[in-house]
Length: 475
Image (tube, one colour):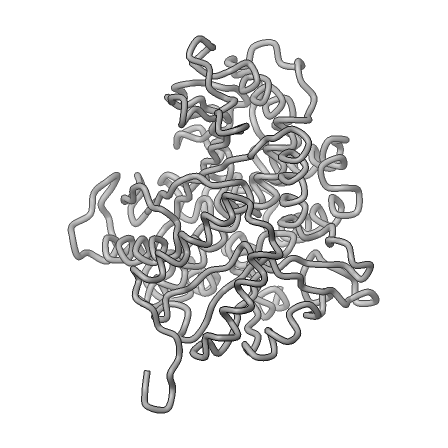
């Protein structure tokens, strides 16, 4: 702030109030035209805002950000176009024009010290040339499915994700891994252990403060099992809000780490010999405020509906593996020596199970899909979990708790099962299914076919979260 620049800078308490208000509107399904009018009025009258950051995700889950001048945005928000051929997994060059719609309900006030002064953030919706939601924008696909479930059945799809990551020394530690060949820990403690004021604790505290200010409604945070590993937990939300928050969570962590001279990594297994990082995905369904997964007299105190949901997930477990474990490096995490959730079974206690039934009550009863990697596209993950759990095939598994099948231990096997499955075509459509497979094949083909014991530079270099045009092109 200076005498020449008077840009919006709100306290964290003010930010939290505004973001919780917007979150409540979203939860109550306030009509979108009402929210749109309110936001446009605010943007017009708040002179201290200089730009609106519009974010969207590509097919692999990479977050893209565009800043629009506030005055331009207010006048032309309904006619924002971009070149889709520049986004991997989107349109071909011959049909490159795409449009960005605005999801006014997904509007955030952001901390000036992290995102820059005078900015607000909103999620965009990718629209094709025909004016319809773009099939490659899985956020739009997820949102449409969630709305159909609410309209047709009264279901609200809920999710809460536990996202683990690592904090490493130095900025851009992933981008330079092909030169250094190693990551350097900032903390060598362990589960729940870090001293106040050490780098890992300062990072967790700062990231948690930013999340709180953005309306995440935090629950707990702590160092994880491996050295320099962290997890910052927050409350559940409707499925689209939950997926958006995963993207924001990773963005916040990366930005805070960079400002501290470090790197936040969401590779599933960046370091050989220690536990990897997961994104345990807790899901439930409510109707009229009632948790449909709860049954105090049911097996493990969850309902028959919940067990049918689990049955369908396990039935299609092999076919979904590539969607839930999206990179070459993901298959290092599915190692039984490190509490790997690679057994296609359900259990209340065994953390090696793909699906776990946590202890719960009427409010918290849920199903936890443990095999998800933190680098997966969160919209694909939540869409495939809910659509499969509700509409997939069932009754092919006689004993849900018996481990007689295992998830793929390498990306090539996962690709074969994904490509051969009719269900993945039903989920994504033939075109998007093949585009996604081609992206994963391209990354896999740049890496040794056999994983071996050491993390290879190519696993990091061609990993979508750290995708870099220069690095990709020097292969």
